[in-house]
Image 1 (cartoon, rainbow, N blue to C red):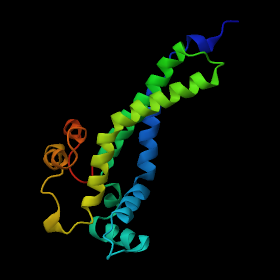
Image 2 (cartoon, rainbow, N blue to C red; image 1 turned 180 degrees about the horizontal axis):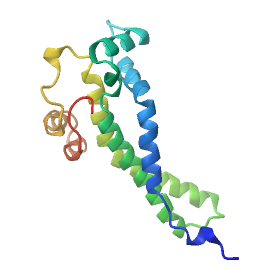
Image 3 (cartoon, one colour; image 1 turned 135 degrees about the vertical axis):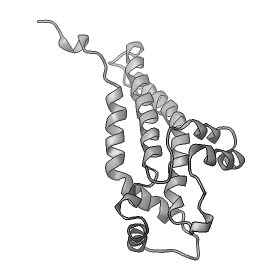
Image 4 (cartoon, rainbow, N blue to C red; image 1 turned 45 degrees about the vertical axis):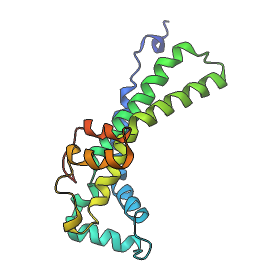
Length: 170
């Protein structure tokens, strides 16, 4: 009987899709975490108050602020990581644990670099909701974020320009 596993094509892109589904489920928790972490030192609010503020100001959709950037980050990070690992397995001895670990570190590192711009923009979009209306960006599209991102972080975060999302929520 032929080995069916050897003829099966790798489905590394499932990793990106599954990561996007996972981030959809955990986005409200991530939003609350970001807002807790970015509080001003003299104005610390408990998580319950942050949750209440988000719901009162934006409804249920407010808990998904920045979701498009989070999906972009997961699709780029996880898909890159899985694709590099699957491709690299052809060149690494499967019985050699250090070779597999080295490949995993390489794939994760490259995936991390690819996902950083999406992560930066996700945090910015998640944080916009707690700003007073007069301090919120007029437009949180990638074009509007690009100028301030480039000024503050330089060329690496400038890659945020190329992200396919618009608006603070979806």
